[in-house]
Image 1: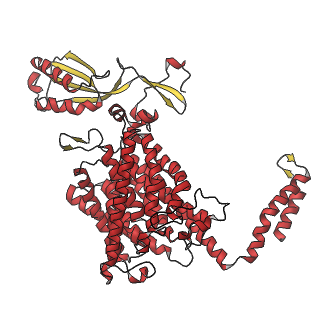
Image 2: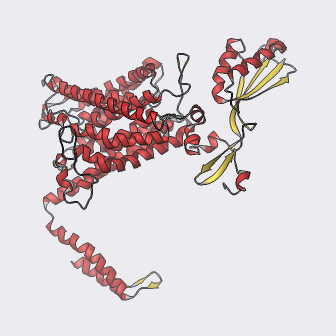
Image 3: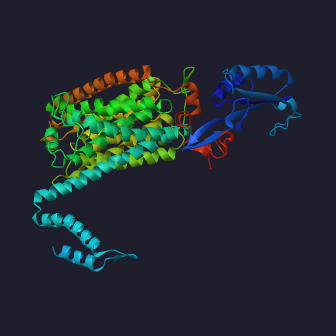
Length: 112
Length: 486
């Protein structure tokens, strides 16, 4: 099992979720995060004083899948989260030891 | 005179003010200035005629009512902010400031003369750049001679109406319209589009001549604003994500508290809007207008409550607010012409219409985040027609004919319909020209990137709610040596 963690733009969440949902990946966790990457912060003015916003708001989407599905999920996220501009985000893949469905106590891939 | 003498003596005898000792000539001067200010007032007080007192009472009421209408701009601001997303709140505030600032100057310069100035039946053209020192100014506005106020009071009451017509549009075009383009629209509406309709109805124009009845502006203010809102929202296009793959998506507003507070402030301001349109206080029962206004607003809430409960299976809070405003807009034309029971009927029907209309406008793929088109255009037309149905013979004796339900036949209803149709046609035509001109020159809509980031940051470089949208991500830029923000 692997956890696919994708940091994406807010406005791309709907299309990513729709694609994953259609392919049968229903279990997702998302969170509002802020971060900095290649897309640097930007400067703004607040009542005459300069302020720089370093960390931009993003969505972090986490989905745990069986090993053989990792490539498919990654390509679906890439296809649906792209604008082609700097700031589209990143994907990290992390190994997962086990999973448990609390209600039934199923473990492993069955619990997903 | 005795009072004045006593005051002067005291001033001269006690020149010590605080710790500073003033020379006695300063005190004498002060006494002289005060005296010269007080003397005419006191002299007048002994000779005030009944007409002077009547004028003073009228002026106090009309200026207070105008101030209530001004307060409606607070209502519009927080209502629109509440019904839209957090990232656009500061932009909504900025646009509402522009409605007042730009609208006020444009209406003063040319809008008021176009509307009430002496001219032909379609347009007024005298009294430009109203000056309080111009004694001839009063002679340029014979259409307002019926109100026994100073021109400054008449102007104040009218200018807050003009800005109200303009501000209706900002909600419908919220979250995607370019700030600069919006400013040019405000100039066009308050300087010309609105005053022309106003001239037709109130300024001695052709609709007034055929006894079209619109007491406080269901047509002149609300139909004008509502139709402009529809054209604006249609030309600028829907917000990103509103209609995707044939779906109607919800883009919920960020604060129902602000939205409903806005509705209640508007309701409060409407007491001035309708009851102040008497333009006098002495000898008229202006509180009777507050009665019909209140009944229609309450009935509007009830109509929207019942219908939204049936359709959506839950009493929709936003729709309750729209229902109140629908009732208020609808009663605006007839508030002085109809009986209490009719006010209830007009309001409840408006409350039902507004719910259906909000759903219908959405089906047309015209994205109106606050429901301005339904509230102001659709219910404005309904209220105008309702005068032709419910106007009583007693209340309309000096204005027009009784309504259909009072044996007046279809004549008044036909006149009302003609007024609505010609207003819709005029505003639609001119607004299509204005909004397309802006679109092809300055640009009417922000870029996709700017819209996603929110207009607060992209148009104004700041947020309405920095801590909620950007979190604690404000940091002092190394580029400006750490001295930027504090």
